[in-house]
Image (cartoon, rainbow, N blue to C red; front, top):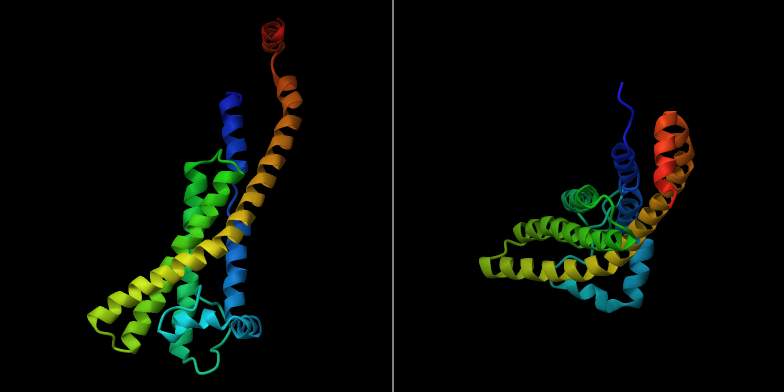
Length: 212
């Protein structure tokens, strides 16, 4: 039975350093839920009424919001669509972060930060697209108004995606740094065991090469 090679050990360590993006996606989900909590969002909108401008002209208020039930005069259909938009955003972010880790398994915290920010922006764009299309059907928008809503919704999504993406990216970078640190410690502890498992002739050869 062939013994595991150094390359196999390295690949295992790389995979361990790129875990599923739970912390980043949990952060995005929590922020989406905060957008849906009127006790928090209502207070912020009262203090900063300028943030109401997008919704006043038929654009998304910010990120798609997760909430357990319809809020105020929101219809059940509107609530379901907004919940679906939030799930689209979260799913897109998860997919992009997972693909990024697969393409760059040895990437450090810096790459993880930008991956988290980019995933949030793309997720916000995808989620708010669902909301904009639904609202266009509700108000029976014409072609010009529909295109304007798409452009305006994209701008709102880009702005909020960047703002929230900084937080999500930071969480993802912290998770990557901690994972790399844990993997490095485990790798250091495994070196003596690997040397001990070598045949005597192999250990002598390694020792001979290491002597100047």
